[in-house]
Image (cartoon, rainbow, N blue to C red; front, side, top):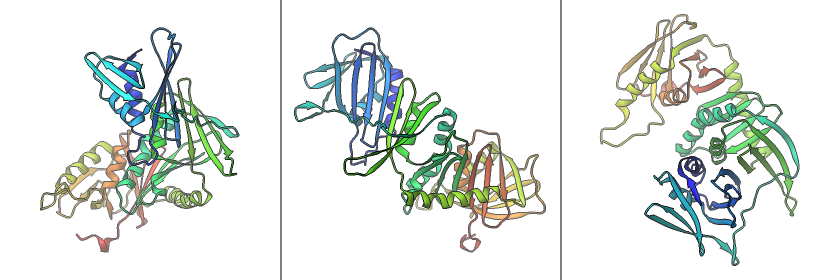
Length: 385
């Protein structure tokens, strides 16, 4: 069976992002060919994803194989030929590319080829369509805070989750991101990064379903399904009232800060500000011993006037960026912030201009379109410059 590498590889590379090498539950992949379609099914029992591919011609012989996902997908990801062949030989799946042959052992249980458990919802409580634009915005915008949490030693598990309800998506660490949108029906979801990364498989609007099914022991499992004609993603998700209440508190606080009337409203070019921060950060990439310092935390003084924003670091290096039309500034305002947090926001912004709101001596809110980021002001007494 011949497969076109590019299209298959594109899906494989996205699924690989969701495979956690530290996960105790190994992911497995099932390849099933029926008539003129090949199905790539992957699960780690927390999520189940199935992607349908067209193949040339119709198969007359049955084709089904189950192998280790990490090994098989990594191998496919590294192929450079336009096509490759898949065949089953004895208890192996054989991948052939020109002069190369690779054997991957199939997985058996009790002398039978492993059966992958499919995640379905029997008792649906919610069903609606979700725009692909919303899924893409969650990946591009909210993931910045979650990636930051993975680098913070004392980050909580809650800070590594995405909270989604009918009003938007919220993620937070020492700063916070509020991505506002509207869903057709009310929901409350806590999703981990593995599931969010699988959103990349979708290129169109999805049919979303949510439900709760009981296990034989009476335990209730909350499940979600997202599907299109060629992609099916299902997952068992966290729906703990205690965790939900813990994330809703900072979410509501962030919303209050975002809606607050600030004394200073500064409109600047996102491109110009990002470039200025990059130049400033260049002086902090190495310490005196030549080792890379922690670039997650880089305090900088911001001095805001009607004409510009000036950033000053501990070495007295400075960068200034002009304010733009739409700014509202009376006098001047100084604050200290972690400039790495600001840079993270700019990296996820696709708009030419952003708005900085400040003046309450507690936080700075950066807005662009329907996305707001809350960045706390630093305690001046603890900044050593």
